[in-house]
Length: 151
Image (cartoon, rainbow, N blue to C red):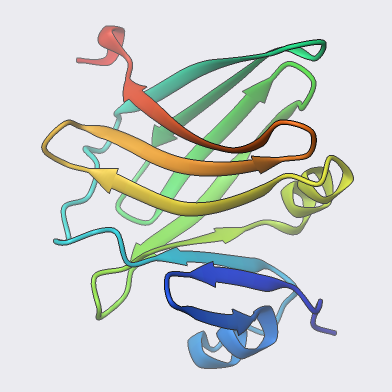
């Protein structure tokens, strides 16, 4: 059974079921894709990217991503949202970055009505950029830098 969600791709909108059919998936996993990546430059394996976000009345939320391979990253979140699991990612033939959001993370994000869009990796600055849409706060562009301990 496909969940009727919309995934954001600049200038184009596809439902999750349309994206799943195009990519051969047969699950309710959400695919987030953007055309922000100009070249296929994967983040270095073993690299750790970390950001602490501070929200009024909510507190701090720590987001950490560790690159395990050219297809798998570990996502850890500490704060209001607690999560620790792997996320698959890839680049498609148009050099767009694609993430497959696991169902358990999708349920958590839906609970708090949080949406991801415009996910990109900047290989020159060695950081990640993501746009978060959070109720009562609005849309926020977040830069997640590589951890200095990791270099």
